[in-house]
Image 1 (cartoon, rainbow, N blue to C red):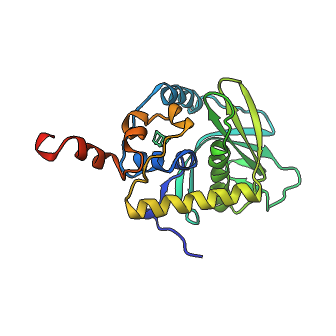
Image 2 (cartoon, rainbow, N blue to C red; image 1 turned 60 degrees about the vertical axis):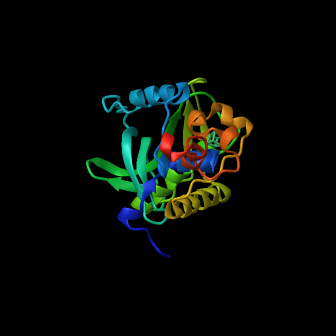
Image 3 (cartoon, rainbow, N blue to C red; image 1 turned 90 degrees about the horizontal axis):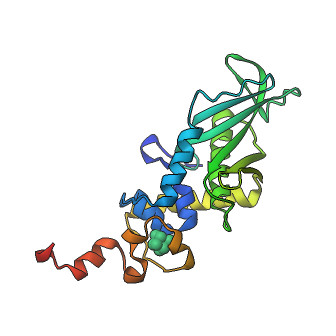
Length: 228
Ligand code: SF4
């Protein structure tokens, strides 16, 4: 299997964008346009609280790591996990647990991702969490069966099983991210109901650019070069 090189790695967090809309992913990660709307600002506020390294849980048989670096040369992704919970493994199963310097014994790893709002009707959050788990599996040579999504609005956490279907979605989305990145082309807009909650609605102009190729083309059409 071909592995990606460091210079080819893409941001893992982008997998939630491509699972929502290919065009949104390309606008953010290929064209690097980003408009903050209420949804993303609230999400960042929640992440600031989560990222506080002083919030340590030091119970005897569990421990919490925050802002954990992630990398997968198989998927070609890098990023950070909000939280990775460590639970002491009394069985010492080396396929499912890892020895960590400074912490006695073996520990099972469970990624936890914090989200604003409530559970979504699609699987973009589950896909992102599963991609984090697949990075940890590759980095530490272990198997991770479950993770959790915590939602700020409901203040509830949901268990996510890393099924074969979810893992194959991660593989196909990450493959597609690399294909799109390599072509450098932004897919055309398709106006759908989810566009109303999209943070890039004002940049994408989905109704105006539907069927077009990119925002630059749309602007060129309404503002000829001489007038820009
Ligand atoms: S407005 Fe709609 S088509 Fe445009 S990026 Fe957002 S979700 Fe995609």
